[in-house]
Image (cartoon, rainbow, N blue to C red; front, side, top):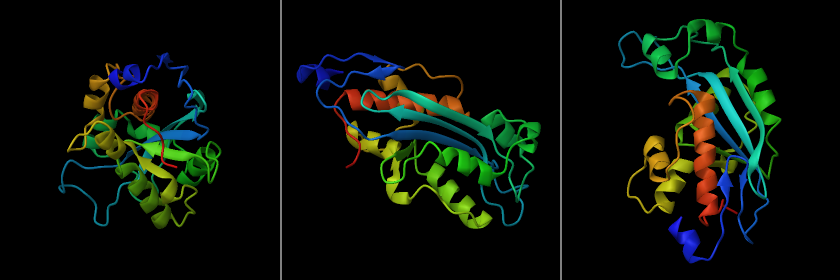
Amino acid sequence: MPDAEKAGRTLVIDRKGIDMANDHDDTPILVVDFEFTTYADTYGRPSGFFPESIEVGAVELVPPDYATGRTYQEFVKPRFFPKLSDFCKQLALIEQADVDGGIDAALMLERLAELFDPGRTWLVAWGDSDYEVLATLCQKYKLSNPFPAERYLDLAAAYRDHARHTYRTPLSIALAEHGIERDGFAHTAMDDTLSTAELLRRMLASGWRMPA
């Protein structure tokens, strides 16, 4: 990390946590990734279709060194459009049997909220689609959303500004820019969550900070 080296920091970075020198923070972070129903195009898409969560992955990053805390992964059964498209199954590596045996979204949100401290924790994901799907799901299912929009951070937008890019960088490219080997496969909830969490650690170690 050139910026950190110029600042005279000594950084130790691994999946157990980071050494942030004298700039310790006390903000809890919950990194999440939702996989959701989708179609390659409009052909075969049911009338009134909207994306529904089919898998969630989450990892708690605990200050001050942002070591990995509690983790959570679960398959979720859609209420409105439970049959997965072939495109969705191939993209997310999820089988129909996985979601058929999944839990209801209400229970998923309840368990996920156990990792979230309202008013303190930041909910972080790569992009804005995760929160959009979450908000729509809560609205359609008539569920209370335990994660207020003002505590959601789109890390893709933050990384764009941090890296001084003029475009939103795909997660795979951002990982490569930091020499991070991807955990598992793209578009699988826990694998994407772990990769995003590691990139976030690198950003924090280089001097970037979560919003106040």
